[in-house]
Image (tube, rainbow, N blue to C red; front, side):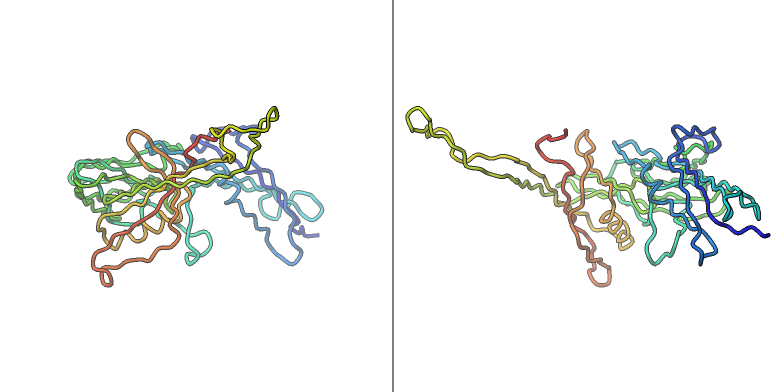
Length: 333
């Protein structure tokens, strides 16, 4: 009697380091999942994206490190009696490289994201005399040429080298990105330096759709505001001894006082190709700002975006409102 597929068992490992290292069930085995086949279906579908994402921890302190992790899925197949399903192989092992990225609805299921430069725009703005960083995916890049300087891209299959951040020298003009054959030109990034001596340029770094850290400078006017929330209660200040009260003591008292700081920030005039970058900033879950010697988490609080074009608006600039991702009063417990 022919075997009929009945169920599967999935062992899901999520780990750092070399792809082929020995795995420890006590630390790297994150999930064991069993699932029966629905009688009217011919296949068993398992969604692992959200499970893996729990182990993609995002932390940034101006240090631009690869946030990818290896994922190894070992699937064992069983028939309807619980015996190993041996029509094909009874076990399959697949290894993935996980990014904290995303596709758009119109891209369809499991879209393939960029395999070379991990930013959407071919323009990149930097302050004058300031170096920058551009993320690339090692699997698809063999070398980059910044102006006339060539850098060969290498790695040893360690997860911490799959996203590499190329240092862009101050006042560089272009970066040409070549495929692993070192001859096929994939794309060219153009660098544009802006000088705004009247204002301080602030660097905002966010996790873009490719799961990489991307910098976006706000060159123009920045306005800081502060809001406070509190609650009040009336307290009894009458002295029980003589029925009087001290006018130096308030009858009303505040509690649960909290404050939040907001920033309203403006880009300079930028190209239309930056619209995609602004959109990715708006929907990013991890955003940081560099202030002095500190990197602090912020949240975009602007909830709507009207895209500007050179045809409709001539000059393109954006104002984005942010809120620091913490209360002014330290209430970390």
